[in-house]
Image (cartoon, rainbow, N blue to C red):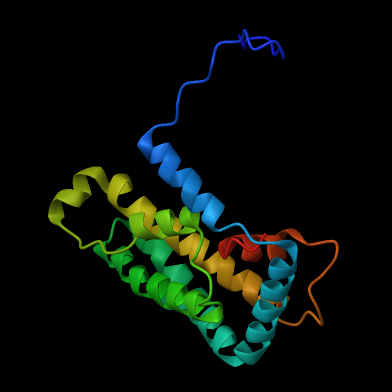
Amino acid sequence: MFPEFTLDGDAIPPNPLTCEEKAQLERGMSRYLKPEEQKRLERLLLERLKQHKAELQVLWEELNGHWGYEDGFYRFYHGSFKVYRVQSLIEKAVKFLRGLLPERELSESFMAIILEGTGKEFKRAHNREWLKYTRPILEAFAHARYMIEMAVRYAELPEPPQPIPSGWAGLLYLYDVR
């Protein structure tokens, strides 16, 4: 199954990294932060959540309002092209999240999900493969909504928590601060 680990140097050398793997590794390493910088950014994020609490609450209510969460999922199950409308809420949430900590790019994983679920325009042919075209929209909506929910939930913290609750850690991972 796995080659046995030895220190004698006789083991089969690993396959060299592909160009794409090297680039991904370099991107990951470039995002590495020293612990003191992590703490600084964590405090800065919490400070900005407090500063933008009113806007955050309005956005949270819009995401959860009738034309967001409720109607978006209904339109998906109903098979209505109107499910595509939630993309504007996704983009609004992402813009807000970017603005909270513009010093950091948003997580590559998060952005991959967002990119797969936005910028879509309905075509009649999508009806034949409904899940293929619309499920990524709702997946992106769910991830954006989660991050906004965690921002709302933890905006009241007096200081960064120890131990770190899962939702706060999730928010920190959004900015690769953890």
